[in-house]
Figure 1 (cartoon, rainbow, N blue to C red):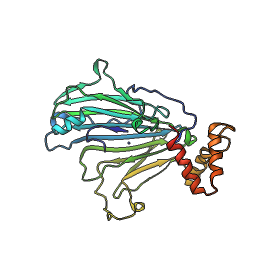
Figure 2: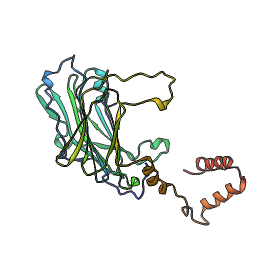
Figure 3: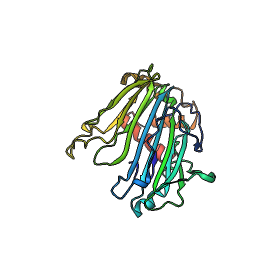
Figure 4: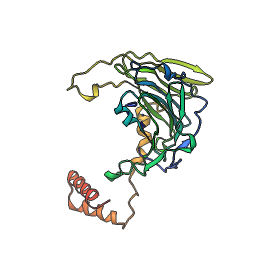
Length: 307
């Protein structure tokens, strides 16, 4: 997931195998279809603030590789302040954060922000650590020096995700840009080996994806901004909301999801006999036969005695 300025508005783990706890710096993979070059000299005050939003994802080998290429026109002092620091998050127990490019486009000039060895800094070891949460998410930041009003800030990164809890399966989701959002170029592209049975679906009204097959890979591509989506009454139940997204998975059914997840919730044998926790469990069991009261006592235990 990437948060920077106003531009982008992207589980349980079994036996984690950690990737890199610091961002990697590499060129984009060969399967990426590069966006058209940006001519910043042709942009003016009427041009969209979002010059480019390009999200390409590959589902292969139990991994989701998500490539995001963004370019934002710094149109106001407020945006200059907000976009001056880039922020990116990833889960090193499931994959890597890979930085491909950070540039400032100024007229006909291209400034490489990473020149001279400048790198992202891991800001803190855990996101939400101040809330006593440990979710494995790391955050990296980069101060963009020399950014000016009217510049175009371009950031191109990838995150990889291979979740051991999914048993070799994958799942992904991508937000589809819809009106009244404006963008110079917007694209969402999903690709996977043709031999793989991938299920995909979009809920967006007016979406007309291009489905193709080339070089052994199936592709689903959404180009441009979708029409404004139908509005529901404010009091409509959440189940009626159809967000403008596309989702894809190698799970064949919800039953397959359930069968994969069920072993992760098995509790037999997890509490060693005679351990302090076993003593607490026995105390709660002896206190009351009421399941609701037992749940309350267990909640009191984890909130009041465990940190």
